[in-house]
Length: 639
Image 1 (cartoon, helix red, strand yellow):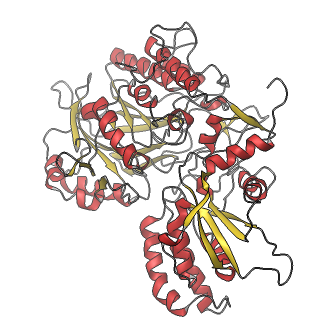
Image 2 (cartoon, rainbow, N blue to C red; image 1 turned 90 degrees about the vertical axis):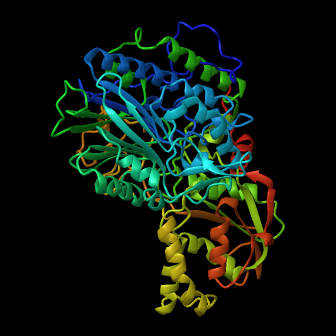
Image 3 (cartoon, rainbow, N blue to C red; image 1 turned 180 degrees about the vertical axis):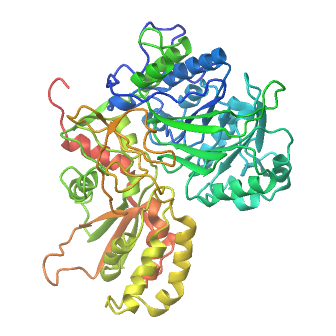
């Protein structure tokens, strides 16, 4: 192993605890026992880590780092060796974008690739964030795929080869392997959901086409398979892709157990397909380590009788040392391994090299993305549309409407230091702002309403505009909307097209059967909220196995819906009758450009991308927020 891209790594092991030096100590809490399968198969799962391999440095409940996870896996591997069971490790993508440890380096990921690969994996797949940019997918292909060799699986992903001048498999299509202790014969696949937003150097084949490929059909007919393992950046619930794969397998093999490992929707979930097929999804941002065990799983070894009724159990482990030490049977002095400590030190060295703890200012209070209603004094979106955006665009000489999607914001702001790292946690994206000049006010003023009419707009799937347009047009045709700026032909001809786009691109809904931390809505991963009750606030997951999946017994947390987009009026007032301008400049986050242009088209004005121009000198939301913080939030002396 090497840390060739981590020049500050020390060549020896420090006699210190793992996790990062600035990480808060975990909070002791009531824990449920790990449903370990002695003599069976046990699997650890991570997904959507988004560069948070240094852990959460402002949240005690998720403060363990990647080095701690390496130590944890080491102890569970030893436990498996001791009791004759097996342990596998699976990761299902989106390891990049969302944390300074990845985003602040040049090139991005300079340190994280070597850090991540120190954890040995049995199955690893890409996510959509590995594919947005051509250079990101090229580096993934050139550096990460070779690190994991045949463990990296890409069943429906190709990449363009300059050498052969054609698209070639990104990684092996599938993997067949035998587990170490039980001799279980596993056939593993690795899928990407039907993603369309990838750069043009990669090609994602729709799952419906992939399962018809001869290689896939031949693989399903492989003899002597004890378990089908399907890993991928695909939600385990309400996803057409996994439903297609499940049916394709069952059309050929009706009784062999199947286990699905999912991702993409940032939730904790466990789905029962049928009595011998289950799927697990394990959260986001290194807040959750998923655990799945299968008991009474038959194998082809001569001394093992094939099981008639395998038992599947799951647990969602809070990523902190208190949980890890308990579940591994270790304590503070015995938990950390040499490799784990070295990786923790490498993370610390990388953070120091990139000055991630440099503070722009200090937040005077907590600002919540979904744990406060909008608008509210502690709403992060309210902070943006009441202070940050107005201050940023106050210099404009022309009347302007500014719109940004709430998906441009990824995380809360906590009271205290607002650092370089914080900027990437809050908004890690590279898209800047674009401008359309001299748009009729009557049209431009309707865009925000249209974008917010129906469904969520996120980084991954800005799709629900079509449903919003359809609903808007329905209002007009029923006479409830007197806005004559809608053209009849546009609504008649376009609403069905937009609805179809919405159906294809709509982000997955919260899983049925899960409840939120308030009990009224499910699935979203919510950071720890400090409270004065004896139980630790956190996840209260309800899934197909019941209500006991979270390893920590949590106090529920309330959260709220937020709008798809927010907007401000700059350079003019709408409070005075007759004071509205004839035309305005329309400025928007570049990421939502296609949907802004589509909205304008449905409002009767057609613009092309060539009609747009750069705004704010190319600044991103990350730049906007950090510059505003530096100017407006001071730190107390000594902080």
